[in-house]
Amino acid sequence: MKKILFTVSLCIIVAKAAAQDNSFLSNISKFLENTEVYELNQVEGHVPLVPYLTVDEALRNVRSKAASFISLNGTWKFHYSDTPQGTPLQFFEKNYNDKGWDTIHVPSNWEMQGYGDPLFRNVSTPFKPNPPFYPKEYNPTGSYRKNFNIPASWKGKEVFLRMEKTASASFVWVNGKEVGYNEGAQEPAEYNITSFIKTGNNTIAVNVYKYSDGYYLEDQDYWRLAGIFDDVWLFAAPPVHIFDWHATTDLDATYTDSRLDISVEVKNYSPDPVNNLTVRATLFDDGKKVITKIESAKFTVSPESGLTVKLSDLIKNPAKWSSEYPNLYSLSFELVNSSGRIEEVISGRIGFKETEIRNQVFYLNGVPLKLNGTNTHMQHPVTGHTMDEATIRKDLALFKQFNINLVRTSHYPPVTRYLELADEYGVYVVDETGDEAHATEYLSGRKDWEPMYRERARKMVLRDRNHPSILFWSAGNESGEGDNICAVIDEGKKFDKTRYWMYGGNAFAHKCEDIIGPRYPQIHNLLKDALLVPSAVDPRPSFLDEYLAVTGNGGGGLDEYW
Image (spheres, rainbow, N blue to C red):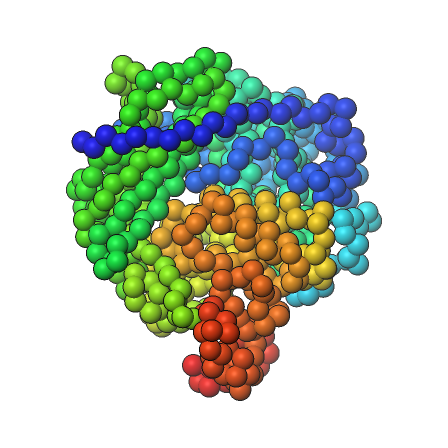
């Protein structure tokens, strides 16, 4: 067993209480029309994870069978109103009488359940844009309630509520107490609700607004739908907990052996220091054979803070990940206490790969790569933006059948299961930040909107960066050419230094992207302005992220493009 030194970076855990003099419903404009407030009381982004008790259980990773997991998917009580003012008074109170309410399935879009208006828009917003203001006369609002039970075995643990995707702005209460706020339809929101819950019966209430200032960054050309449309779940973790992990691979000059570098973030939610902890990481191949086992030196986590443990090893000739050969490895992480007892185990999957740009050519594992790609929306004819696994599998199987090796997730990060299956099927992914200010592209040059741009990139990268299928990142789509696009790329590169960035802008190229367009060029312009430009003039490779949109009777020029 290899002993690896760790490096420490302290981060204080701050549990901010919702300000009672600025309660959620007393003045919603202070939230919905304030570019400085786009989240409240949320846990920082991280890879989705469920704690398990054993390595075998973690490797199977069936979260529905984990003692630390509770799904809140299913039937919720539901009230719909055309305006926020129609929200029932005190609906969030634990003992509120909701017997007269309708029911709705979560996850879903309420427009697909018979409420509100499903609209398709390309460039224009459904109302006259006036950022950061939303239309007062019509802002569909959904009020949700659900009871759930907390088992006695969760006593003494930290409990987290995770809402994967909610369109667009939402307030959350648990047992009548304000928990937090979120803007951003396509990014997860996670809250530590330990202080709000009790053993036995509990109540969660959520108010969802279709329009807010954040909606101006969600002007994607697709069906405009609202609601809680992805998984909602709880997980319980011990007071000292593996909060996040990140693995990177670095192939040698012959693309044979690889460095495996791992960061494991451990947090201590208790008021006392916890001493003599150890993190043990084990790498397994597809047959669950142990490839390496790496153990940290003993470390201490200070009260109500966290540290990052660094682990590293040289892996001899691992099977590389590519579209043709999607070789996956499993990683388990054990948190071991001072007496040698395992506190928790989590797991994930990785692939060994390396991307490079040399002289306008994009390389994967030392081989020039040609991308035969398409764009896709998370869109289902019956369930709207709520995606099921069977549909995802059908899409990916069709891609492979027709030699499509790449998909750009236009124009937001996909559901997590999409990336997990792309890892398995061997489909390259361009993971796109959820910012498209199509009707108000000038927002990309407004400094007051920069934090909102950055936050969407940060949440995407922190959630998705361990997936080998992600070939490179996108800084958004048709959101203007201002410096906020540079801010998105800058933010993303803080948390993933191994991948390049493109941007789906309408200009020929953006100054901050690593991979340029052009977009919808005529063939002679494609040759003149991109393919025949010397590397000394622009060393960046050219990637046609959009060039054929079949929204009419047919598409022409496909043979010529290829």
